Length: 520
Image (cartoon, rainbow, N blue to C red; front, side):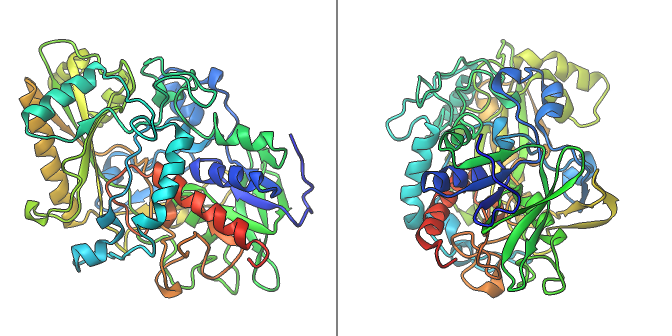
């Protein structure tokens, strides 16, 4: 692997190796940029993934201390672990579920379309579907997304057949096994899916797209990228002129190093990104870097979610096959006659027994609980994924009491459910139950939200510097050579799973950096 000196001043430092950071690294490497990527976790090869959910969680997940507060269910059920994200090369995409819907036009214009909603910080994005369309195309090609760009559809497994049967009988018309970012057949040097059901624990076969099997090895092959693992960024430093000039990071032994930089891009997820920028505060930036607007850490979103499980008389074996290759799109529209703004998807979910028993009824026990566990092989599931509204008071801050293993302030994630979120969730639960009853379910169970995998919005994009943290290219308003390259920059969350949109935004960002690097 190429190696750069700590005092090299012409490198771009990218913090985080998930979909945003890895996409940026590959695109810049192909243009000849010299890149140092800092990843807080280790490199875990596909063959070393553990097909056991509990062991895989410890192997791949970010388990550093966090604190959840507010009225959201996660503050009650998982107060120390409100978010589920990766701490490993490839980031959360090493175990993501893989659905890749695009945003819809109205979801870029929520303030204009939804109007003013009390206690919501709605704003229109400074870009729209037209600016992103070609980048969506490129992202789908890069992922090999099924149903898109000439790629075949994913075959249906039993869990999807139950979902589709119920959807048809319930009167829905827009449902399918994708778009889904796993190869149906060999593509881009990766094999077709084995339908082995273990992709959420890391896909040993390499059929599922992730930066670990795609962008990172391609970037390394250019000879322009140095990847430093077990290297957690703790501070972005500025020069006398107020430009980013380096990143301080801790290695696996806790020793600190400083890599000089000509450009810094932060892609640490919507919790760790604002935390790092806050930890990097200076006398000129007392509330954190790029925070002259006061918006850093605010407008935290994680999608309105919940699960509906349904028991049937016959075996379903939901855990066989791709875990989320099924989606009902009909409710993803904006229709205020339903009693709420925005929309939601109903997505097939398949879990191993450890996850099922943990999330179906957190802390549950007793005869009713064990009866549901005994029905596991006869159970199907729907995961609700809906647009939650941003609120300025829903935010990530630095905890005054909780520290991480380096002695740094841990993030405190505060979130209160908006009335709109609760109305949407109630509607979605009822429709999910309707789908399963139409398919012949004997019993349905409503389960609460699981730790958030879709963490968004804490460095929001805005046209005016007073309204957000970054511009439409993810460039911070305050520091021209400091970028954000993850879901933090979402102005609003939409209903769609975010990974495809993150990748599209970063492809656009990479073009901007390449075209303007001499003046950034």
